[in-house]
Image (cartoon, rainbow, N blue to C red):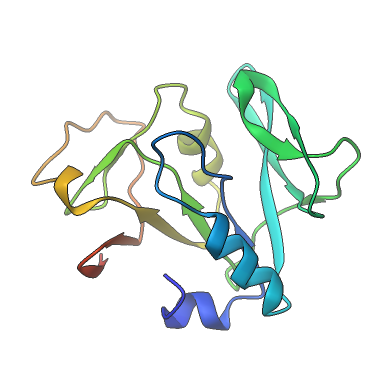
Length: 150
């Protein structure tokens, strides 16, 4: 992830704060901040709606138990100069991801111009995941073996 040109050239990194068995993002967040990039994490409002708040180093437990920026964090909107790391339980080689079923990211990504990236363990990379009409694919899938550009 850190060696991707899209990441190195990005101004801001929109990502999730990894928990439990999710692919780790904490080092990515640290490296982005060290490089002077702005980092934004999801703020979940419920009802399928979310935004991204600027990460200042402090977190709180949000809706659904997801770590999010503290109350009052500046809401940021991604541009084509940014990257967005999208969480997934697993992914396929066409960039289709299986999330947790709430559809938050699919709704958000519908209007997102940022380069979208999914981190996936190689052992969880499928040939094909069933896709619904509203499931959106990512631009890049990264496994331990490297990136798959779509």
